[in-house]
Image (tube, rainbow, N blue to C red; front, side):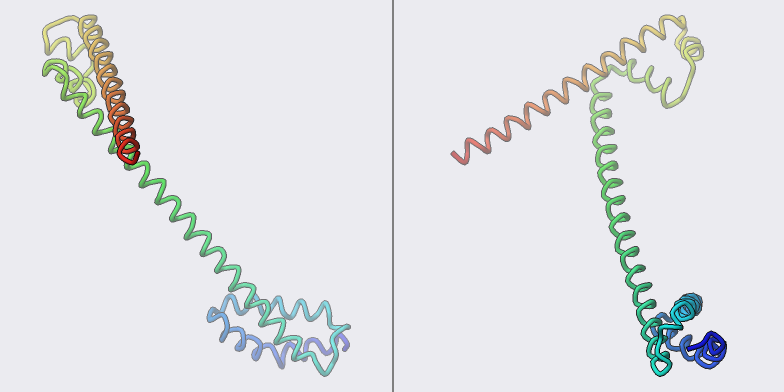
Length: 182
């Protein structure tokens, strides 16, 4: 088959191949892209394609390229869905951890004296400086600093003790289950 007949084949068969691809892909831009690939492939292999079988070659190539595109998109879709699901799982896990941290902190804060809680509240929730806290409490800045340091140490100690107690409870619960099964 000679290269001069390529333009005639493209003119005569281009619309038919495009319509065939539209039935498979249902998207004009994809059909145009694949049609272009089909004719480029045909042009490169024209010398080896039998003149009587060129239509078969064109339609088979179009079909295969269209199916490859669909399979590729399905793999990407599945991968995206998997990644989205994994991201949701991580987010759910992070939310559980954040919620648990909030519960631990709230429980520890409830064990503080009211004046200790108020000092922390003034610093963190109200975002007041040491100077403003000292003015409102009619004390010095170093006194506010040292009180907040002591309160934070106390809070850490409460949280640590609570987590150790929780670990002991969990450990005892596991042992109780093991002993129940013996």
